[in-house]
Length: 501
Image 1: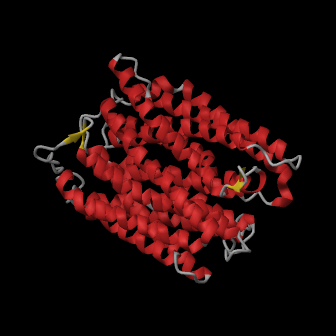
Image 2: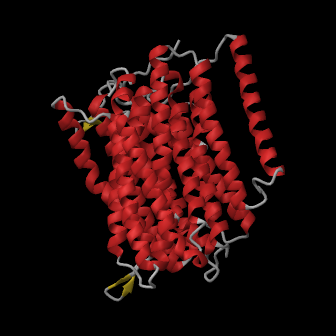
Image 3: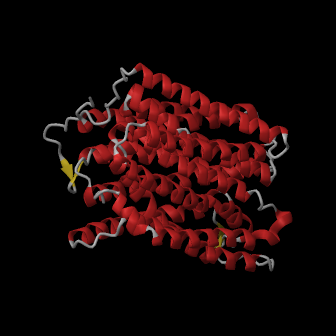
């Protein structure tokens, strides 16, 4: 029997939303400051051989970047399981924040590659524990669902991007203009501020939300069968990776080969987990249909993030090497272009949040599958712009920053049609006993997209500049094609959602 979540007595509101939403808003804001700030300079640090960076080539550096950013989101899956079954969401957020801060402290210490990679692993571990669970608690604040819940996630998403804007500005400037490790240290300070916010205001305004832990099953037979299934699944992954290694298909002794192997693991894990919950999760017919819808959203999100997350990889390299950075005689840090995403989100989030409520009140709701399809179409349009810009760059001319501005505008609009909507959809459609785990799977889609983005950027070395238009064109084709296909299936997918908008 599932625990009942009690609403805090006399819960105060702010702009029509529980104050608890804004506690989570600021906690997530500081965590995202640390993550996006560090991410903004990570690839530049890895390929820098002049100012004390790692001095890697583009292929190896981009692969490591992809492995890290993918790991951050992949670890959301065990992070969700730990919250659902061991700690509860609130404790997972608290401990995850501490681990993140420790990781950034390690990165701030000038040292060799071994210690640096240890810091990356520590940050990824802590983020995997915090990220899915703070989103799940936001969902718990709105048990009634509906457009108000979508609006809440849009507000929460503004916190994510306010943190990103501050982080990229401060960490990016410190890293590129003062010293890489000063930037990493600033990320540690930001996470500390997030922990202080959560500790001071969480208990007062969140009540019992986020304290749910699933009761252990008393059915020994089912538990044993589940363990055997998990062991069998892990064995299949090990055998497959060993076969790919020994046949020469993959070389996991290199960063690029390891990233490719990780892509196979992520794909198999996600598909296997969805199949496992579908077949052995004790779901009824309605829940199974909703799970199929969530799997479709997962695939769409993975494709979207593969294009969106080029911001810290291929688009960052394009900004650094092929874009005119001069502004009234001052050279703008190239990492600041990543701020365009956050700035556009802060500008358009309240507009779209109001639009969803306006349409819902007039019984003209824009369905979730249609929003996902629209996001992919915007992504494709953004990369059409980059195809034009990259062809101009081949002439040897530094391109106008307006190309990146319009690319970021289209990508950001696509993100607003997918990310906050996807967070809300997963929190509403997931069965209660699998809420955090399925929220973790949502972030696994982001993980897969990040990994693809890192591998994609490996082709951006200066000896292969002529390949840029074709690389950007491939993203444009996939985005536009997938968007149109999903649009065709929007109505049946909405029907399978079982009346949940």
